[in-house]
Amino acid sequence: MASNELETLRLSVAALKDKLKRLVEDSPRATLSKKTVPRIDGTSPMNDQVTAENPYSRLMALKKMGIVENFEEIRNKTVVICGIGGIGAVAADMLVRCGVGKLILFDNDKVEMANMNRLFFRPDQVGLSKTEAAKDTLSSINPDVEFEQYDYDISGIDNFDHLKDRFFHGGIDSESKVDLVLSCVDNYTARMVINQACTELDVVWMESGVSETAMSGHIQLMLPGRTSCYMCAPPLLVQTGIDESTLKREGVCAASLPTTMSIIAGLLVQNSLKYLLDFGLVSYYLGYDSMSNYFPAQIVYPNLECSLLACVEKQQEYAGWQPIFSLPESDEVSVIHETNEWDIEVIENNTYYDNNYQYDYQEEYVQAGDNTAGEASLDDLKQQLSEQFEPNPEEEELL
Ligand SMILES: [Zn+2]
Image 1 (cartoon, rainbow, N blue to C red):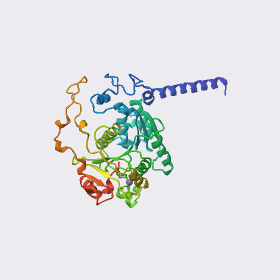
Image 2: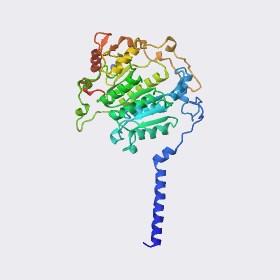
Image 3: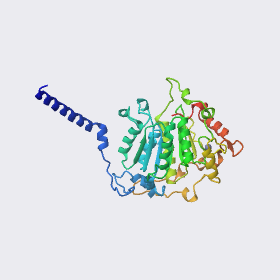
Image 4: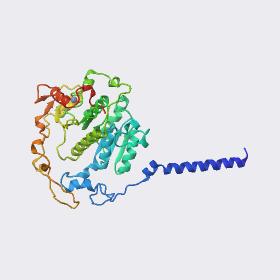
């Protein structure tokens, strides 16, 4: 080849490389990642200045109004989300907007067009791993949040030690335990894995689920040794040892609605905020039945004969623990400002509903696996829930 032809080829390749570089730099994703969100005071953990530029001003208003004593504590909290689907992705979005310190995300799925009926993911993210796509979006919403993300199946035996390590050392200081684990997964096996890891490590977690018909769902607070664990009263499928993957039929999938998913995500994150920041009454179990507008609230106590040894050990450790069913007297009436500098009107809660509608937890509690103790047995609870939710237990709790 003549030297001038070679030179021409070299120049063409250089021009093409340059063009490609510019195309990559100008792509929407690259532009998005280059944008910086202005912060008005990087030295403050959470600024309460009331300006249009401050993303935290309305959150900090909760502190000024006396609802949350120390909202900026959220910056020190680490939350794990297992499953970045219809509930988990929305929960992650909400926590990031609330200024959580650190999020650890687990999922091994990719974004699909079939996910577009739910909130959060976009068509241009199809094909990306859910954890990477979620981190991209979430860090552009709030770059103050620290992220860890793992693209693997948490049910895999080989991954269990790593999963436990992240629960045990994933805290904001990279040494301590995480503050809360949220289960937003779509299968029983993954729930059992989360349950085992959290119970063994004494890490508090919250379970969530939406029924196959997309018409009902629930959240449940799991305090190892104090409230029922997932194995204290396992679902029928787990009890009978049926492989749930064999139940999935070709061409048939669960229904889902962005509304129900987001409502359950909202209940889950609301309960998470109350638990993490210690305000209001934290729900032990809260159900939602869209068809009948029913929100059952219960507590399920652990089963002394639970098949998970760590659960039985934790029950002995926490013997004598008492649940909280009502707010302290001083918290019942919040600080009321009829008007304020933000022009927000705060009205006493009692204006909106009759006091008789306030739920009394003490009327409905359950001893898991013990039909003789308590005022209601687990079977009673299941019966009650099946009447309010779905008649077929095999249909429940799938995303
Ligand atoms: Zn248990």
